[in-house]
Length: 366
Image 1 (cartoon, rainbow, N blue to C red):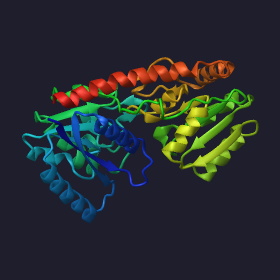
Image 2: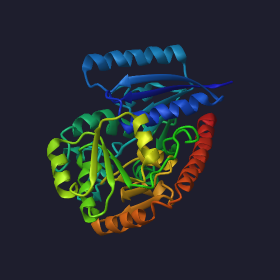
Image 3: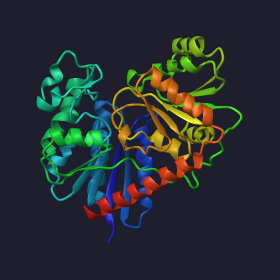
Image 4: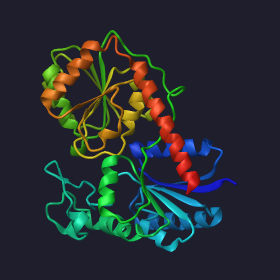
């Protein structure tokens, strides 16, 4: 008999976040399996009282109609919140942590590039004036506090996306039902064709103008701006930073500002790009853009963020400062015409197949 899984995600309204994409990919993988009967429920991530109330009522009605064995929950806010788990007894709940708010209501438990564990030791440290966000109380009520309570219930199972998050959660929460699994992605056999350019060196960067995403790290390219290459940038950047970027590095480099593009367009660019530049400064879960790049055979030059340790070494170089960046960049640049892009793709495909098999077994054995 198939297990019934109700998959719920609070999707970002604009539909362009990595969390949205990873949720949709996991839905495809689970629904293609013969082990499960999947019901999908997506909720727009809108913080309006009437909309939240309506969504929560719809969730309760859907839950009563479908009567799932497992509720698979991505992004527990704005609805349904973690509080509802207190009222479930027989139904198992699997909760995917996409960020660090189970420890810190601010969501970024790092100050001065060091881990801040105040919230781990004292749930009321959100009152600390040094916290970066004014939303601390809001997230404390909807996320950190309820997780501290419901994590003691045996029907709650938590999935974290990298070993750093796993170690942090284990140091904070008493629950034994915590496992590490990355987000799953379909294999690249039919997803993208590797068609790398050997005439010009193409670099791709995707993100938004937020300090966490390290967008100003793009200025590191100034150290190699004497070399000819093409820089393609996807995402929202304001005009002042675009002008700064063109002034600092654009006099020899061809820069293409693509704006907000679809995931299919991202895949097409990755299939032809010679290098992905990933610049996040703080924590990340298991960034889908790196996974998709490697599935397309594209190597990655990445900052040393928390979570990078879970990626395969083949096709990945990590920099800690501008000198590292320049050295790693030059190593890729000198060998891009003969680089074994197919090996990067095969290696990531192999790893994802193992994780997919293990994750399907995980749900089947709950």
